[in-house]
Image (cartoon, rainbow, N blue to C red; front, side, top):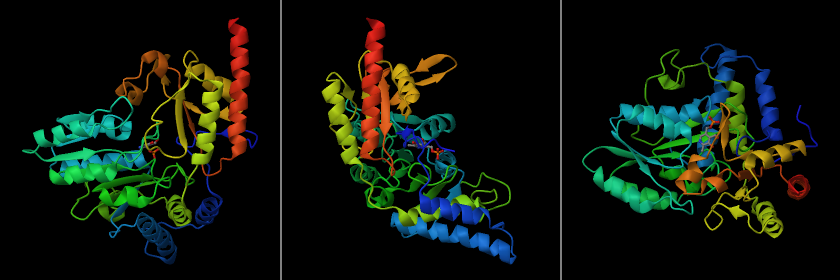
Length: 375
Ligand code: PLP
């Protein structure tokens, strides 16, 4: 049971369930049926699946209903890359800031991978994208660029990138996991040949995602089994989560947490004038603030906040005892000493100005303790 006294500001990692979504999911959990069964109970389960497919496609404003439910976006990214591979695309042009679900898997399955770097401000370098496209004209390239970055919140200029890609006759894969529910769908959905979304970043359940295919894109048939999802992704459909995902799409509204984010960043810079906010001058998700206070390690700050009841995340991942710097910050050429201080605050649908006050108070108290210890 979630401790209601805590301040949860890690919504880009996962977010609390919306009330309507939870109600829908609980109702479907109590409704036994396998969507592949032909009896009445199976038909009811199938209805959940088909209705949810319609709700998601309608929310995204797409004409086709070629949507494959998966166990989350990681699986959807892999299915998308498998589809590109099975369709004979042989050059993968991948953004440097892509999530590992795309980045690492593309490197694993494609021999020819070209990386599109970031500029130091976090912007995708379109001139290099164009160079890669023109150099790959003899082959069959596709481009994978995310709609918005999970760490910095920086939004990619999807319509401009799409224009360039079409000029070169390439195909476009868009990981819209962080954009889904936080940006207007017409800013990203209609441009993609493969579109990837996930439920849990904006009030849906964990463990549900989808891959949407534009007309002409063929799914990879490499998930042998029961032949669910029209043979495109075997495995009994997770009807409660699918029903909850569709319900989520039907209740999403214009999400805008810029007031909270701006208030937080204003106070951050007032109290710590040397703080660096990554991507601040670019168009970002309204809920995301990614910053570093020099000489205050993320490890220390994240733990200090956790002990004060505030959940945020750091830009560096700790595995096997060593701290790994964020690939995104590396791509932005951020100095190692700053990168190891990077902390992400991500507001959610439930966040309020009380949460902004709570994190700032906790940071001020932690800073006083830190300075007293150092003295
Ligand atoms: N892509 C992006 C941009 C993400 O932020 C994430 C999750 O953090 C994923 C893909 C993977 O999503 P899922 O947790 O649904 O597997």
